[in-house]
Length: 197
Image (cartoon, one colour):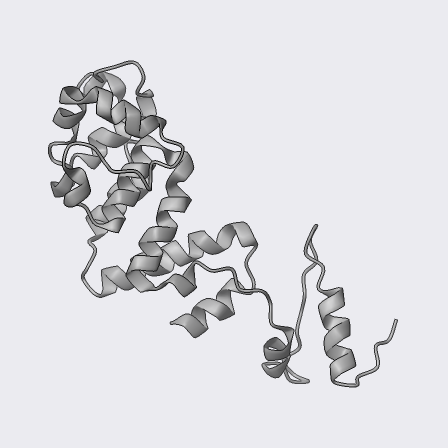
């Protein structure tokens, strides 16, 4: 699995690598029957198909409408069946958690901390603080399939060269901030290959 991860992540922009690792993790856990398609659906869709007028009114104005709809959708998951009641009862604690700089690391209010998995924590973070989802995803991925899947791996031109042949060349696509020229020149120098141009 890690070899495949390394092979594919080589062709991704840095900002897409965590998304790929998250997709890989979810697929592995679904195949192992440790995670359901329904749970993934709740994570991916959130409350996008819900209408604020058709669901229970949010308890306080500090909760953005989108977050409330995501929480309503999340409450369909068995672990979060009492989430909405918890927010009504303890909106002060939830507000403190919401206002944290890094809520994915903070203790979740009202006993949820002791009963959720890393995947469920990521779902809750996505519901209330979508801006912190990828940070929460790192902890989930590390827990599920290992920390090496969230570490940035620089391109190893030597091993990439070893996979090529005269009939399977290396093709490098250039983009702003991604210029492999220096790596190619260093590899050519170490292999004593003359560079033309």
